[in-house]
Length: 171
Image 1 (tube, rainbow, N blue to C red):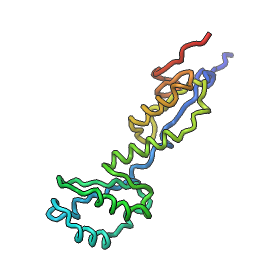
Image 2: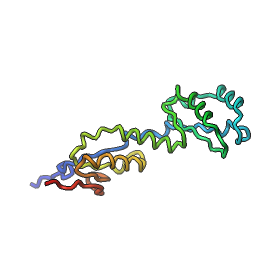
Image 3: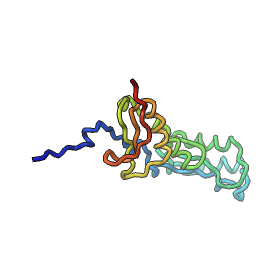
Image 4: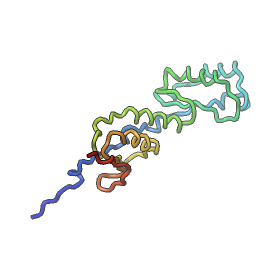
């Protein structure tokens, strides 16, 4: 009787799933200054400050907030600072730009925090599919982080990989 051998298990390939490091997009919100502008063009300081005092900030509780202005208006820097001062005590984080900018910043933070010592000298396959979409930035940053310490980097699944990098053999 012939024994079935699991060549993938014997290969020594380590799978790295990036999904646990990717923040949930539902935890991101944008704060747009546009509705606070007079005729969506001009920021009137007294009115702006009064509107912020009356605003219901609870919707941003524990959210990653991106402060932006979608109107084609000149916004003084202090206005963004003022909004940030209201958000800071309740939001998980406050950033400037689009939700995509803020999301990518959080992905960068998460990837940079990964301890790669367990991958040192190993053959690593970065998982290519799963239950959530992994942004391209995560794959790029993870490859750059792994390359100096691994024997090889691959993309996909252990049974079907695309080679990305292979360390030169040392004699």
